[in-house]
Image (cartoon, rainbow, N blue to C red; front, side, top):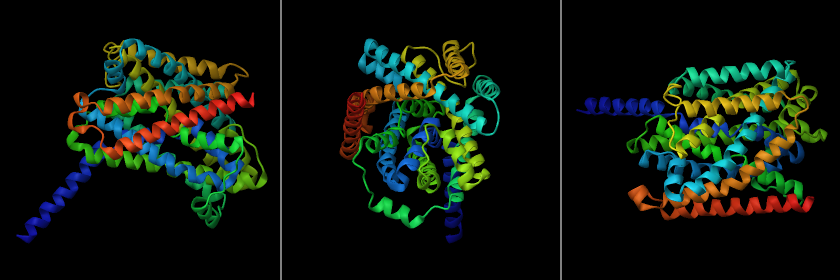
Length: 419
């Protein structure tokens, strides 16, 4: 009898493990995409300018990421609808149109930033952007248009795991672990505009409007159900941990090497170049490779998310499991975003810093709008039934909204004041 119980217990464990790996994907991929070219730049600047003193910001960023992604996933499995569809149903077509008009403009800027990361990382290795950008664009396009969701998701998971290359890059910089511990336990705040701006940037770069739509759409595209919710939650937790771990080691890599030398960087490739004389050529190559993987990963995901939520909002078929003739609007939008982003990067002396800044400002403008929409929808019983937010969900969720709105207002105030 005891033997049978042990065998049954083992079968249940193996069945749960198999089920988890079948579900694994949306949370891990969405969390990993946070560490895109813009995120890597932000973390690199944080480490280069302030050393280990901004590592503490990853703790609230981690909490925000879990809260928002959990609500996204719950809405997806309960309603079977994407976030764009729910916003249109609950806010009306006019409001939806203006929200998504702003989001698509911001996402073109975000996608352009990803191709800037591809160009920069390859330039560190001596490859011209006129070669790397078109080749990367074609590869990304073929993966999405000619592949299917299962193939694409497996590639994305490999990309997610490749981001852990930054651990190697950080360890090569020989970090001071006691200083890191002290910086986390008792951080030293610099009460200046630059420090506060980087705090906003580090917290804000972990969550972008397009990411919210992608998370929910990927849950639906994978066909996940309420019965799998505990495994979905575990997937989200792993994805959020991966995001914060990678961000931690990017900050550490730059804080250990660039900060003591007073090296100033404007974009992620500057960090890789600066690492060469300080931590060795291999550290620079590893950092560049991580930037390339992150950029090409995000250059794939971001246009998918944008095309998906635009089509969903206005009633067109969408999804990478569909053929071109089944979802022509989806694939046309996706292809259009890729082409526009690549062409901008290939313009000689394109103002990449301005493009990045404008796209991040637009993200800041629309993020609170999208979050408020999520909080309203997830609390509607006619939409969510018994799966509406509990008290603690609302406490954390609305606190997140208020803090993000306050940070956005302060950010714009700083921008105006600095002018």
